[in-house]
Amino acid sequence: MAKRRVLFIGGTGVISSACSALAVESGIDLHILNRGRTTARPLPPGVTVVRGDIDSGEIPALGDFDSVTNWVAFTPDQVRRDIELFGGRTGQYVFISSASAYQTPPSRVPVTESTPLRNPYWRYSRDKIACEDALTAAYRNDGFPATIVRPSHTYDRTLVPFDGGWTVLGRMLAGKPVIVHGDGTSLWTLTHHEDFARAFVPLLGHPRTVGDTFQITSGDVLTWDQIAHTLAAALGTTARIVHVPSDAIAEADPDWGAGLLGDKAHSMIFDNSKIRDVVPGWQAVIPFERGAREIAEWYQADPARQVTDERLDAVMDKLAERFSLSGRG
Image (cartoon, rainbow, N blue to C red; front, side, top):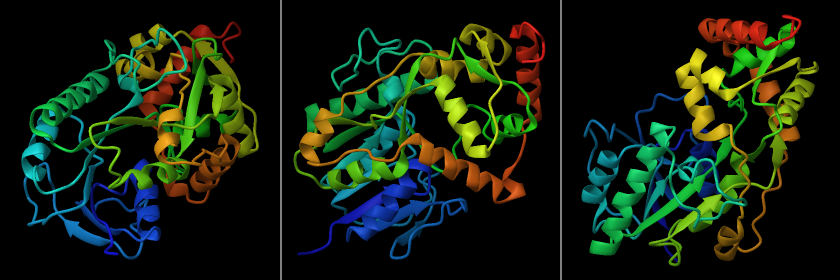
């Protein structure tokens, strides 16, 4: 049997890196189109690398593929370009959407693929919805072979769940207060990228996925206070938490606030029955306790990774002082 010929546009990101590694391990003939600028997650041996920038149009002739996944499409213009580029040249086009596209806040949980799409708070999510709309129309009108995948918060060793990255870990190690939005009790689902990959790779070229939508998340649901304490424990310290209303965070830092009001501030629990129907036996098995240790070890292994965002750190100091009764966290 001939190997499946698959193209990843991107392939070295937080989610896609694990999928690239597993695709090659699974015997897929994987071609990756990217600019070659990412070093944190090197490509696995056995990949055919195609250097180019699809957004600038600077790409060589690609040929035909059994399946194409664009990991770096965020706007409907990018998706419409891909429909033109890959129409008639692939048996499946996979679009990576986002669970933040779902109704925000959700009217009920667990969230399923049939939950309405509406996010009035975050432009990123509205653009993902518009991309899905373009692909759905192309499938209905012209048979364009689109498959839509919605990840939620998927992480690897390089990605701290809190905005600010190392800035938050550094504050924990320094004994400084850590900002947690709301009262810290909203529920959040974290998915390790290796768990995501084990559900995603079997979708590539799967005949029952075309024209359909799948969410891939774990069942690892924690409160935001638990997430902070788990990270601190992995660092060998404790988290001095200060709770701050999401609206106040948005007022102090609109970019930080957009991701909260448009996503993280709301409890999100998912039903993964649909993905298990097409990937029998799949289950997310990596708890955040293990993931937190991987994050802590990766950042502490190299001082060059320990970069503090001075501006955001100052914003956190001001919020902590304002919302801590003692002024000391």
